[in-house]
Length: 125
Image 1 (spheres, rainbow, N blue to C red):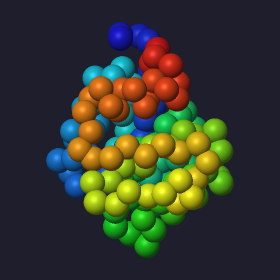
Image 2 (cartoon, rainbow, N blue to C red):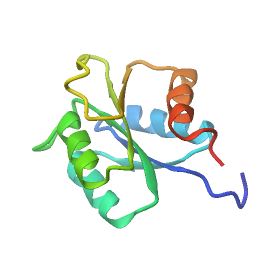
Image 3 (cartoon, helix red, strand yellow):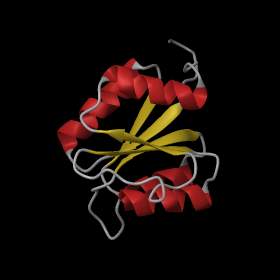
Image 4 (tube, one colour):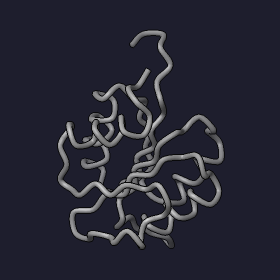
């Protein structure tokens, strides 16, 4: 992938080891991972980096706002960004998710994540 510009994916996950694992899966799928530990950090990153195309957020991130509220905020401020919501404890209904968001239950495999990522953007360049 040297020299090729990769699609940027922001992963928002408070558990460090899970975040590292998801980051590595994103990289293995051919995308450029960016990390945030909580919603405030994610919003700050999105304000600065206009090249992020996909956000993967855990529902149960701590902070004043959780993953679903973060996703709805992203949808309203940055409508083109694709959203993947994850959780190993909660399964949101379609009404809970913002438009065009996909739910990916934990634990997920590299194949599961790759299918959702490629479904949004096609293969990473």
